[in-house]
Image (cartoon, rainbow, N blue to C red; front, side, top):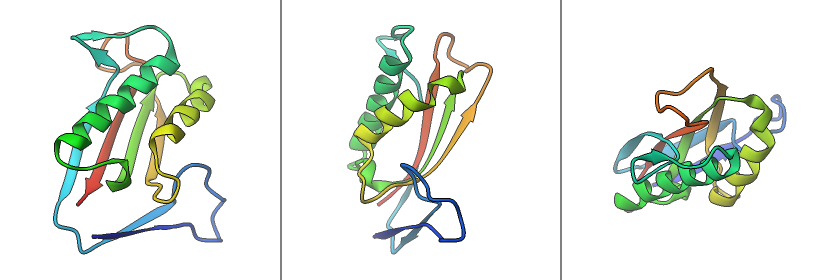
Length: 128
């Protein structure tokens, strides 16, 4: 499997993501459902940063279960209930994502998530 992050000079310079990810010669594609900040059946904390760390940690566990890591992720969709937390989101996201293999990312502000109390949900597409 090979992957290349592509950022055309005709588009704005991305910060912490790639505009395009090309994947070749892969064995499998994994679609990981939205991960929320739930531990032991409950949403943890009302703190956005803590929720974000747990959502990404849950995604990491899902990836590891199938023998993958964040370097295998080619697409992230992130849903947050308050766009004022973008700065905090980017800080946490940077801790998990490898700088040399950034995925394409879409972040969407939503009024609510299906899991009551959750402020963030992260879904991914990964390749092997």
